[in-house]
Image (cartoon, rainbow, N blue to C red; front, side):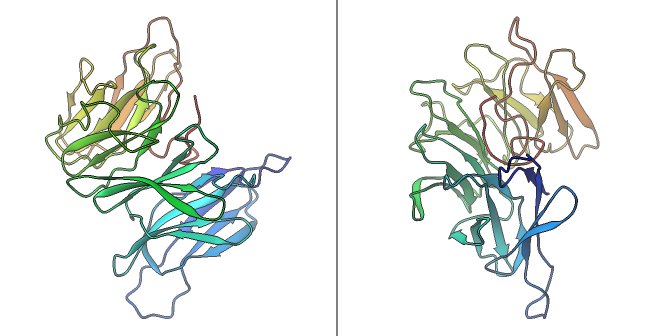
Length: 309
């Protein structure tokens, strides 16, 4: 899935399109190496990067200014034929940084988690979620969270606990049947109630962060392989009338005011063959409240970068 952004932040404001591509192969074969491409809006190819290993899986690129140079970097997690995973950070000047962790089915999330000068990268790897930050010369690990099962849930980023000083939290699911909400600065649970053990099946979907309470929001909206949709507040309590049942496993949510009536909706596709749409509770007196992380990979441009709504 491509991502779209103004990578070089040039005065004309034109957007670039970023896509990562791999060739399905049985090694060894004489096939061109896997690559990441950047196209201008008119289809002109402006940049082309070769990955450090031949991939059989690559997930969607994430776009953010990681090192503070004014250009956006491209962050891609990958897996090769032998299931070795890593994450590469491509810079527009042609240089590449590499992290030895990653997952072919978890897209990284990026944001200024601590309120400092660094922009952090959050990524999944096996049964863990890692947070890295740029030191000026390379990447250092800030924290890691170990779960009881494989992590196949792309993380979301938002100020969930609403505590001062303001810092962002990280939310994700795990195949251990739990939903996690951890602090962006230390990776510890945001309150003793987390992780939530409400689901009765693996949680492989990506969370959405919505607003149903004007004072205590945002809230966490996520599906589970137990065929239920959960809406949880910051203390892990479900919000009425959730959980709502389906007749199959849901995908990740897409949220927004789809009919311009001032009320936000949640949209889920499920393998029961139906597209499910629900009106969400809306903060009293507030039309179209800002959504902190309304969909998989944050926004329609699929940048994976948190910006305050």
